[in-house]
Structure formats: C-alpha cells, structure tokens
Image (cartoon, rainbow, N blue to C red; front, side, top):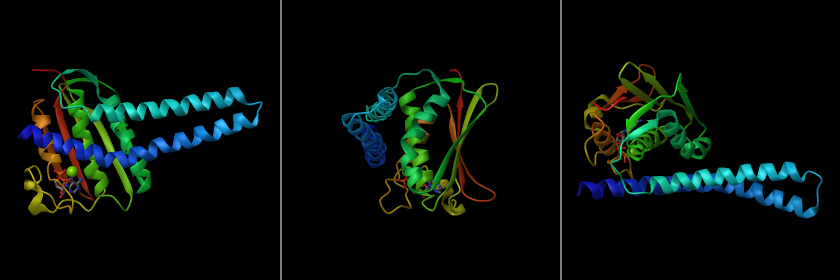
Length: 224
Ligand code: ADP
Ligand code: MG
C-alpha cells in the first residue's frame, strides 16, 4: 500500500509539473517555427539560425528526458551521483512556474561533490520540497537551494520566504495525509522523509528568524 501511495504522489507531482513543463517546451517550439519561417523567406544568416535552432531542440530534448525520468517507477539503485547535477535538473523543471510567480530560484554551492544515493529518489525529494516552497511563495520572492558539506555529510537546504509554519503544526508535517492545502495530498513530506531515512539521513524543518521556512536535508556522502 505504501508503494501505491508513493506512486500516486509521484503521478500527481508529475501531473502538476506537466503544465509548467508544457510552457517550457512551447517557448523553444515557437522560436523554432519563427526560424523555419525566416529560412523559408530566404536569408544570408542561415548558419547563425541553424545554431540557434539546434540549441532550442536541445532544450526540448532535455526537458522531455527529465519528464520521462520522473515518471519512471521508484527504483532502489544507489550510485555515486553529482549533487549539483541533480539539483539543477530539478530546478530546471520549476523554472517556468517560478517565472510565472516572480520567484527567483537561486542555487548556492561552493563545490559539486558526489554522494552515494538513488538519483531518482533524491530528485523526488528535491521536487517535493521545491514544490512546497513554490506553493508558499505565489506572491513572489526568492527560494534558495544551498549546498554545504562537512567531512562526512552533505547538507541541502531549501530556504523559502513564505508565510512560515505555525509552531503548533510543525511536528505534524511529516505525518501522512497532513495537509493545510485545499487540494494537497499531505504525502510529499512523508515520502521525502522515508526516502531520506532510506539513505541514513534526515530532514530538519526550521522556522526562519526573519521570514519563511527552511527544509534541511542531511545525507551521508558515503555509504556506512
Ligand atoms: P501537501 O503539499 O500536499 O500539503 P506535504 O506533505 O508536501 O503535503 O506538506 C504537508 C504540509 O506541510 C503542507 O500542507 C503545509 O502545511 C506544510 N508545508 C510544507 N512545506 C512548507 C513550506 N515550505 N512552508 C510552509 N509550510 C509548508
Ligand atoms: Mg507537498
């Protein structure tokens, strides 16, 4: 049953991302059409246009690969994975939604290291946490994804400027089906927590001093 829950949350996350991703694909398609029309009309800038068109096709290709990736069933295959690559892939998915709500998505990291993890699962956690952050910031602002390391741990913080979490519900957030949203599932944090625990890590939830919340993932860099 747990697997079914994980699956259903996965689909709904993918479903909600789909609208944003559709926009992300439509822009390069519109641009491609424009350049085809320019080429049809005859031009001396053919080579320049071809180069732009190939870039636009690459964009579409990357986005569709990401969508296919997150719609795959949950695996349990741990490998050495670059942390920044996973973060950037997920941030890309949210970029058009962020733009729509005037949200700046900022990744802060001094270096990229590899951690021993299941890439699909960790990306799922990042998707769930970023989705929550975006949902709190529909009036705009900045979401920071910060990466730190100490000798044996990787720490990824997702810091939002939303209204924050009321003190009296903070201990309930990881419970299944706990939601304060009209169409929420209340499964995102429960699943994320399970995934991170499956990596011998933890998720800390912090009320920011000034504004908003921080969800801090701590994961061992190497298997124990
Ligand atoms: P859902 O997003 O479907 O409600 P989640 O498990 O992802 O389910 O989150 C549970 C609840 O935790 C949310 O309904 C919300 O009340 C709270 N929450 C999660 N992320 C944040 C955040 N960044 N800021 C404030 N509250 C949050
Ligand atoms: Mg959620």
